[in-house]
Length: 67
Image (tube, rainbow, N blue to C red):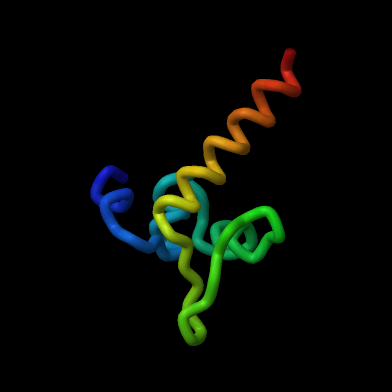
């Protein structure tokens, strides 16, 4: 996944590989309101910076809820 994080944008395939989930599930996540994705024509993308920030935010929410 390190090579993906060096990219400026990530595809649904990259997101699926990172999470170890199916491609359709990655599309569903990326279409969600809490995920900072955007479209380039008909293709979905997320910037690597926004992806990292989203993951950190989710980790923070999860750890805060456990306390």
